Image 1: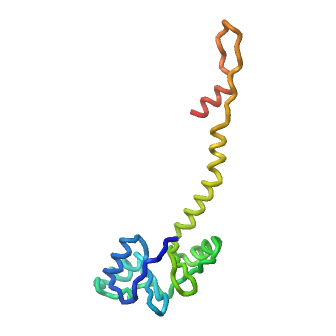
Image 2: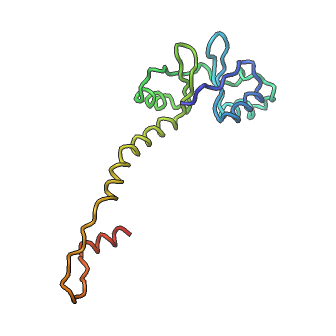
Image 3: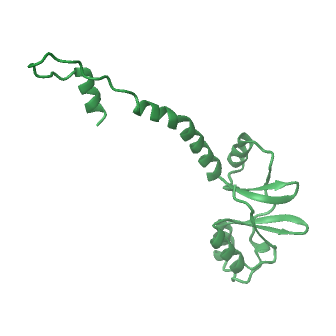
Length: 159
């Protein structure tokens, strides 16, 4: 989750909101004292503003997505995945009560799952890589050492 979320008022111009989006690499939330009113995404800018020929001084309230689907800070990962999946959205504001405190993107739970797998599999992988290889069998003096087929196979497979 990125926190704090990027917030602007519903009357903010498209140009200013787009600048904030670019600087924080995030969608913006349209908020005021009355709470959360909408979300402005890059898709909203392109499909609802640019394609419609709206000017840069147009207030975001004219193109933002509303109402906004949110999730509480107490939600577990299964609820987050389900919300993204069921609603076909890519950004999900996180709220405490009605106050936005962060923003989840669909990539956040994927990064979390990848990190959990790395945390789980990393030690196993390192353990397998550090396994002691059997030492070669001693040979009688004067006889050339013959490669052990098992260790030779591991050496070739491990290259």
